[in-house]
Image 1 (cartoon, rainbow, N blue to C red):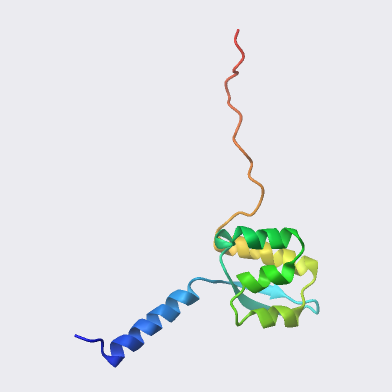
Image 2 (image 1 turned 90 degrees about the horizontal axis):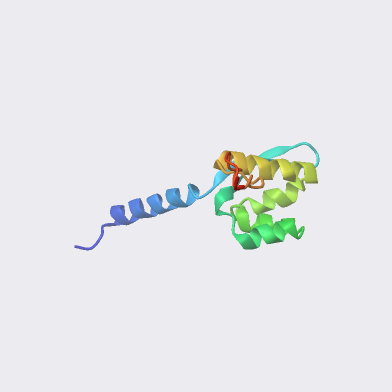
Length: 116
C-alpha cells in the first residue's frame, strides 16, 4: 500500500526534526557586544579537516563547515573578536559534553618497574 500524503508529511517532519538535533545552540558574541545564538555541529563531531582549518587560522572555513547553513551569515554579521571566538569554541565544547583540551595521557603506575 503506498504511503498517504499525511504519512509523507509526517516522515518529512521527523526528518527535519532529526536534522535540527544534529546541532547544539551556542551563544556567539560579536565585536560590538551583541550576542546571538547560532547552531553548531557538536564538538565531538567536528571533522579533522575543520580542526586543521582552525589550527591554520582559517576561522571562516571552520565556521562555515560547522555552523548550520542558515547561521553562517549571523557569524559574518557579528564579526567576533578572537576572545569571543575562543569563548564560542569553549562553550560549544561544554554544551556538547566534549572536552577539547589536551589529553592528560596515561597515568603513571603507582608501582615501580625497576628490578631490585
